[in-house]
Image (cartoon, rainbow, N blue to C red):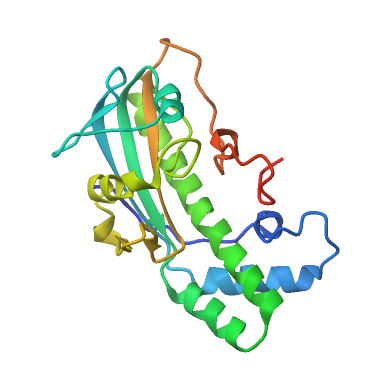
Length: 223
């Protein structure tokens, strides 16, 4: 049960601007930097992952309680995979509490920036987890497909319970609301396919999964 606890040394201001929908706007860079700094100080980064055998024909994950991944796009993405890594990551709930506090104080712009910085932070944690996993996968003769999360493409959020269960996300304090929202809100789950080297063209890592998402007009889409 590998658990990731490395600290965040910085939060990417450019990505924070993108998640805040400010890529084309003239905005105070000092405020963005302040939000990134506060998010870094408030973040409690944690991650966890598990590896399972996978049948790419039936799209079945052979966990303790096997389950079938539903969705054509995710199935195509994992084509050829012999194993999958299911991961979860979070920055905790302290940032969200401060986002709510600043919004209640009518500091709307800063609240939005802090929220965006938290989103950037949890994505950076997942990126770092992938970098930590990659050498181990390579040593076993696998290449990694970039991570794919419920909500991307046609992969339904209805499968979040399976990802929480199989990643053992409860060990790092992540749970699920009745409406299938992750708690703490700044958390993610994802799956990574492991394909035997030499059996196909590897799909390079895409940090934010935009290549897998059908929402082409999303203001946060990575260009």
